[in-house]
Image (tube, rainbow, N blue to C red; front, top):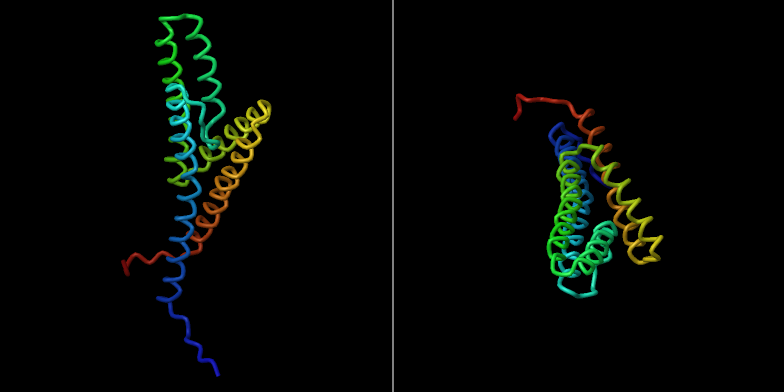
Length: 171
């Protein structure tokens, strides 16, 4: 025969706290994709500027396009090309910086930057498909699956927080 322990307010509070902690971790982990996208995009740019052809599939196609255009302009300009490459690198930093902002605001559970980031990353994936980079596009889809999950976790956490009775006298 199984003995059941009656639920106390403390045990139900513990369950709520554990669920909130779990959802907060899910949000954080899923939004962290924005940081990975930004960092590896810049790493791709640095690798490209160093003359290597190796790239990470998680990076942005947009920064690769900027790198290609600026590289072509640099070759046309000859010695003045270093300035063009630096301008391209600054543009790449700006693009990556936008994704960092999406990550920072997403961690604060603000939805609109996550949604804008999703839309931009979908468009970036479409660009990769146009260039027949199927592996990069597939990786975009995988990352997007994780990022979209953050919106679901935010909604669940907000619902949980509205259901939780606030009792400040115990704190």
